[in-house]
Length: 295
Ligand SMILES: [Zn+2]
Image (cartoon, rainbow, N blue to C red):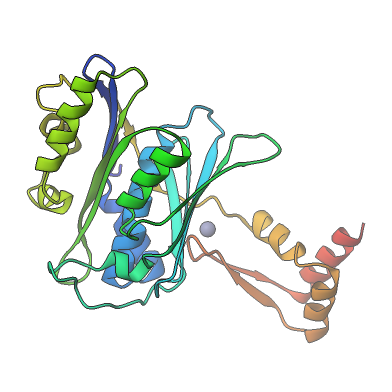
């Protein structure tokens, strides 16, 4: 059993809903799979943490979504997907990215991601056309960018805080965060109370460093607003790749490319972007694929 989980609840008589998460294990798993530098781990870890909580917002069992962050920084993009069971996976373009710490001594996630670019959320709810929401990056620090996404693209005023703390040996020490959303019809009093409280909340990493649990997060941030926890959900790093899916992807390169591979006379090796699993296809198997794709 993973120690990662999300709590979901409401506060101020249902005028606010919140999600708080602890995600150390899944972020550490991502770090190990991709052998990432500390700043890459922080960038992907923040995005995975947000996606885990956003997974808990999905209504349909089979709903999925993908977050694409395309900034002008050296990390060269972040891709994360999640399902309605808060199972997440992701990768970055450049897992080796190294940058000097920011002035405050923090990992420079904004510098790695870039300050200019796009954040895209592609939601697949089983309809023919997926729903795509897109906003410009604010800082590349992920939490601020998602706050803007929720406000502009989904018209839900939200407070997003995400943090990943590393150990000296570059393993993940703590990871977690929260998303608090003001629901339609919330009173001005509740909104200003929440805004006031959020200005008092210091860096989320400091709260994480104190070992604050998701329950304590909720109590702390929504003190005086009667936070009520509705449920506790597990979350994990999970990849659903299979030989069959990968072979479909290989087939999708087209007839010409398949013929080329067969003529090369060598088996091909395909690595899953999300989990690193290796799939080897022999020349005979490539020939079978060519036959299938021709029919
Ligand atoms: Zn995989």
